Amino acid sequence: MLSKLTLEEAIIKLDSKEISSEDLTRSVLSSIENKEKDLNAYITVDAENALNKAKLIDTKRAKGEKVGKLAGVPVAIKDIISTKDLLTTAGSKILSNYIPPFDATVTKKLKEADTVIVGKTNMDEFAMGSSTETSYYGPTKNPRDLTRVPGGSSGGSAAAVAADETIFALGTDTGGSIRQPASFCGVVGLKPTYGRVSRRGVFAMGSSLDQVGPITKTVKDAAIALEVIAGKDKLDSTSVDMEVPEYSKNLGKSIKGMRIGLPQEYFEGLDSRIAENIHKAVERLASEGAQVVDVSLPYTKYALAVYYIIMPSEVSANLAKYDGIKYGYSAKDAENLMETYLKSRAKGFGPEPKRRIMIGAYALSSGYYEAYYLKAQKVRALVKQDYEEVFKKVDVLVTPTSPVLPFKIGEKMTDPLQMYLADVYTVPVNIAGIPAISVPANEVMDLPVGMQIIGPQWEEEKILNMAYVYEQNKEVS
Image 1 (tube, rainbow, N blue to C red):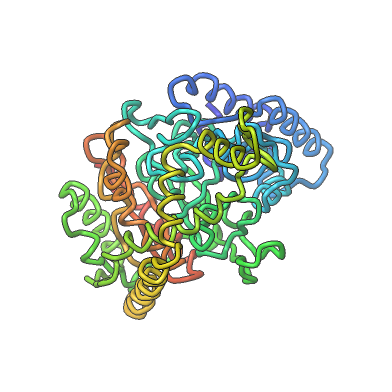
Image 2: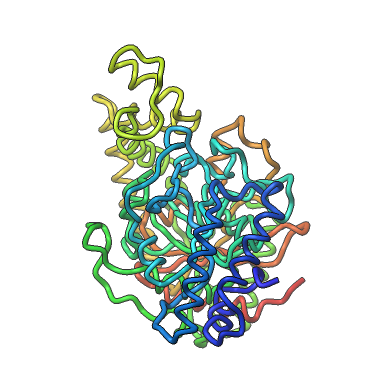
């Protein structure tokens, strides 16, 4: 099936006219049709427009006209990223009828590259969750085991890639929401440095934490995708004006002499099977000439607590605009303005957004701001300082992506704290604003395990190359 192609393979075959975009798109849509009843990876499938775009690309190619870098390649986009004239819900009832009048910058870049957008993927409501179970549109299931979650909040994107329901996908990562589902589904997930990719048109959850990134079948695919979506955006003041390297052409360099740090805090109390898996992966990197060094990140243990003060505070502010007035769901039984606000938000938001809005409002309230939010920001600076210091000693850090294997659907839904702990190894990276990638290591009980490679700010090249070297040389157990 053509839908099984990697992004790199698809580009080569399309450019050489060995296959057509229409055939590739039909294969992806067929895969969606056959698997969606089990997976629920998509909220919206835009089959008609996708096929029309594919035919247009084929026509341009046949005429010898110039086409974009990813011309004719099907892509899926997380439903928190704005797509002009295509339903964008953020997995929430409150936006169940919202059709954006503009594209997010990353969507625009994908369109300029002539990709074929096949649909919008399922996700935890407003990206709040670690399992894609909080979606208003029902949970997504893990293609590797339909009784288990695919991770979250970008679970739909990861499941779609793993199930060959798309060639690649975009997700967003606020505390691990690209890397953790990539780990659970056995695919590659890249969270770039904060500011590397524009956030314009991405519905904000935690504005100082959110970052868009690719979910792909291989490391090289992630590098290719990042080349397209990265770069300064004059409409996003948090995006940074830095040259975007040719990531995909800088892979395969020798890692001999590079120093890999193993933070001891990431291995304390860890499932021994996952720990053994990661140590074997590190041994594989060492056999390629890398030096392995034990390091410490003492403030890491505070990162999750910091995150669950700062993130809900930003959520509380960002979700205030969904008031039932301007757009989205509006309660019909309200008798006055105040009731419109209260009833629209009460009926439009699910339990998890409500929980985080309330926590954030509390943390920002008079008398508590200094005790919680301000203190959390001070500790955040210490977490970031930890990474700055350790990267003076090592080139990259290697850790597990998740402390647990993909868990059963419903297993953690009644215990928010246990659900939050699923992100304990990914959250610190967002707190510090640095890049990280999750790459499949070997499996435990036929379930995927992700290895996380963390790098200094703006050093995506370094972690991509390390991940690529591992991917090319790993032993399959």
